Image (tube, rainbow, N blue to C red; front, side, top):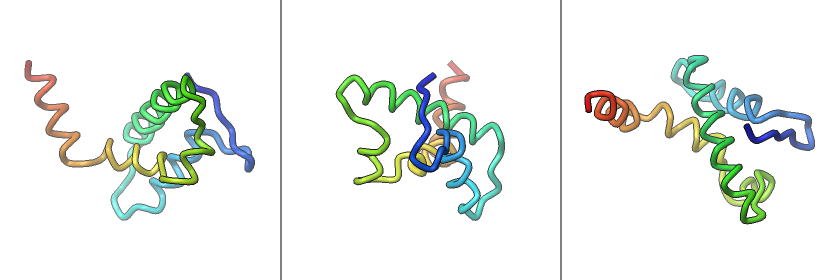
Length: 85
């Protein structure tokens, strides 16, 4: 898994959990773990191009976007379709 701590010594999980706490819905450990894994995978791919989370922080809230994607209703439907196959 992509290892990361920022200037405030926060891990990827810390970043995702902070986003989850700010949302109105009830965050589950499973959702936070899935969002953290997605974030790590995306950062691993981006690192091959010299892009880090610090770079993303200048343009978007990548931890927040990963969490939002995991908890979105569309993701739930996609997961149902994939398991039905």
